[in-house]
Length: 94
Image (tube, rainbow, N blue to C red; front, side, top):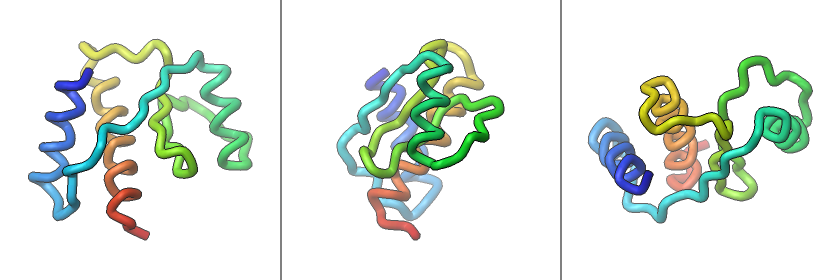
């Protein structure tokens, strides 16, 4: 996992102007019901159709489904998406 995060951060750095020399984010793997519950509590919504993950701005944590698989290209794309939110947050992009 560490190597994947490093390679994705290098990719983000190469394709954007963001600083990606950052500490690795905390990544939590949660069962779907807990993922949805945490998202709804943080976002103040009740809309979680097809929730695969989210970035928690308050805690600087990436939350992913506990079924996330490092060998699945779709799951890797979810991690990349959430890493971009993490990088944007630490680069103070509004």
